[in-house]
Length: 111
Image (cartoon, rainbow, N blue to C red; front, side, top):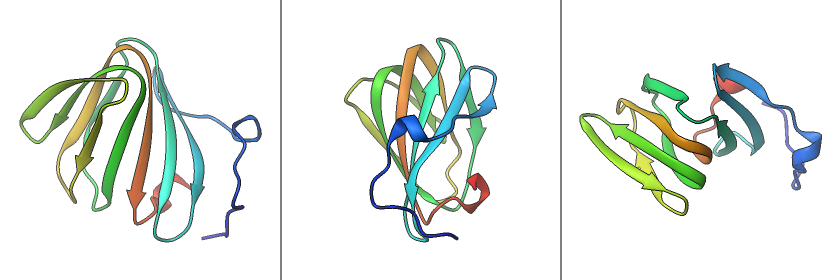
């Protein structure tokens, strides 16, 4: 895993299409931690999935229906959620939004 600069500028980053209506940009990482900005169009879906990484997510904009295992909650700008290792989770964007994800360890599959 290559070393990242200490400072990241969004205008120098690149957006990657994940699924229809969803794009992500890696904001910074090392082996232990990765921060990712994810943009959602209204009604876009981040499909249910799981991974061994711990995930903490901040809702920077919009509203999302967040499902973790069999529980769903409607979260809004300023809210957060935490996903433990290998828990099934996903989101539905209720209004155009942005999530800021932090992963431990870094998601090598995103590189």
